Image (cartoon, rainbow, N blue to C red; front, side):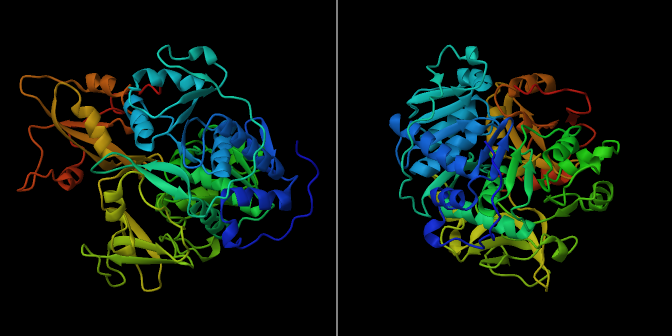
Amino acid sequence: MVRAMAPIPEIPVTLPRSQRTLPQMLTVQAERYRDRPLLTIREVTWTFGDAANVASRRAGMLAAAGIGPGDRVALLLGNRIELMEMVLACGWMGAIAVPINTAAMGPQIRYFLENSGARVLVIESDLLPRLDQVEMDRLALDRIWVVGDSQDAVASTQRVESLPAPGAPIPAAAVKSGDTLAILYTSGTTGPSKGVMFPHAQYYWWGINSIQLLEITAQDVLCTTLPLFHINALSSFAQALLSGAHMVLHERFSASGFWPAMGKSRATVVYLLGAMVPILLARPPTVEERNHRVRLALGPGVPPDMIADFVKRTGVRLLEGYASTETNFVIGSTIDLQKPGTIGRIRPGYHARVVDDEDFEVAPGVAGELLLRADEPFAFATGYYGMPDKTVEAWRNLWFHTGDRTVCDADGNFRFLDRLKDAIRRRGENISSYEVEQVLLSHSSVEMVAVFPVRSELAEDEVMAAIVVKAGCRLEPLELMTFCEPRMPYFAIPRFLDFVPELPRTENGKVQKYKLRERGPGAQTWDREAVGYVLKRR
């Protein structure tokens, strides 16, 4: 129940180090903003006081089921209140939340559960049939809890039960700022997806940095259509929690429904991905594009030639910036200081270098890999779960290696150029080329394959695959699409297919993907969208 609002106190710039944990953030802000609305998802609204109570009661439920500090709780849920309940509960008691992309299919779900060692899976009822394709042997799972209306969709081969009711409240655990709050999976390039160990203090700094760059106050309404299993939307909750603002979360992005939803929510700050702006601009102008209160949108990666048109049509200014799951919102400038064509300047308390192949810093204006480092303990991730070798590789020489190619000018403004590594980002999703290749290689007619990104008309990545078919076999593109659909997320299924006699290689046999990227789609390339093939979003 949302009651009359108390006077709004000043926003703290920072909290003491002892309070940079989720339980402390919930407790301190509940005292400060108790009856103000904090979060609205669908028909449910929490006040700041409600959030702390929900966290303690859901933590009590987990404790009654035998879950304790350090245990992993996997969450295969869409944008619904139960996902936030479980994240807060894990943080409250010192357990670790493991959000899973709802587009994940059997092999990916199995990998996330096995890699994280999750003891509990909380899954939406509509997604239960996915478990029929998951090999459950040797997993650490003790329980599978189901939420949602269609409980009759229970997979016959799995033992599942409804999510228990909230339990008796328990006191917050003595969580430390460096303890892991969540494991967030991000794409691999030469291997499977990596589980980023995301500490409590990193979550706190995500909120603080975003508040300062977006100039958020307690009067703001933060509205997003992005999925909660990614850091973009998850960090919006930290922004609201630490600023006294109200976060409104919608179920999903809809081009036709976006502006009406923003107007209805009375949003003042919204969150966009680069590809969403061309999609919105492709629609005919409507009254709703101006009938709103939105003053600012966080929109990294928007095609530069579309920014002016978007501002003119909607009246909404777009803020650029740089962040990653492993780091934080560490490069950016407030909207009035933003220099066109750049992603901004390094934030106070952080350091950036642009380096060559041997980690030596290059001169201003010279392109190289972006390296980042933080002054505050645990402002960045603590590594990749169960992957010490990948952790050492990424954090070598005491700097985090982003794998992104940038250039810094003499005034300290950064420009993002491209990715150095073979990572693919499509519609806000990080795609592991390795995982796509493994699915394609499991087809009986595929001898060799290379998966790589190519640019699309939306100024983002599309997935392309070069395939060598086994001798004596035939393979049709539509057959391969049908094979991929139940085995990988819809957004990872290649749009472009090239059937080639061989793959370009170095003298020691390594596939030269850069040559394939440079060549891109050609006259012989099969294009899923050109032939009108529509993927089934299971």
